[in-house]
Image 1: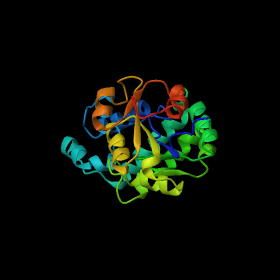
Image 2: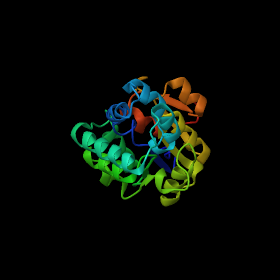
Image 3: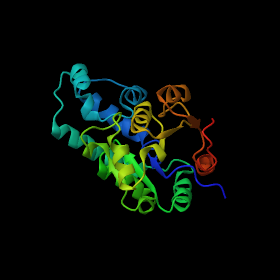
Image 4: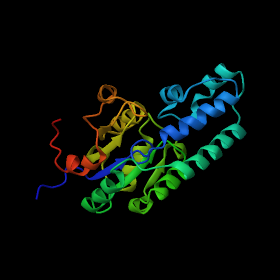
Length: 229
């Protein structure tokens, strides 16, 4: 049997494992509208995908004239989480792919997200795969720098005892792809459609070595990877 070509697989969460972006961006659009910024869900997706809302405080204040407070951010998280608890669904094929790769790699898989840790764990639990990661779930918000910096991917690789250059990273945003590349990993872009995900060309420009559309194909794609797309 040909050896598996990576020592570990590191997943982004939102847009890769869970279909959360439409829900989160709807809540964000509603709350920005309440501050006076009439913005569509499509526009919040374009402006905020892959980013922390708090990091875009200057933009929000510029467009609304309202200073972004910790209380507002906490309200956003609470409303967002209630909507996710009601509506969140898995990315088609993601749970099966995670379980298959967990078996192939003897558990050497992790989640490395830019979202807050409580949200990430809640989402993984809701679609039934939190236990697959054995506690290896990381948030860039708990580290000195979040994506597009490599910190969260470096932390995940270190926890698994893996050389980052021997890791595969699964991402669906340009910012996340940049983080994986900066960590030295081999990044695979997931782009099933242009709504809520970066396009194939953008992911490749950011450094993804291959872009795929069907999460169910991921285990065989990684197992058979030869470095040629």
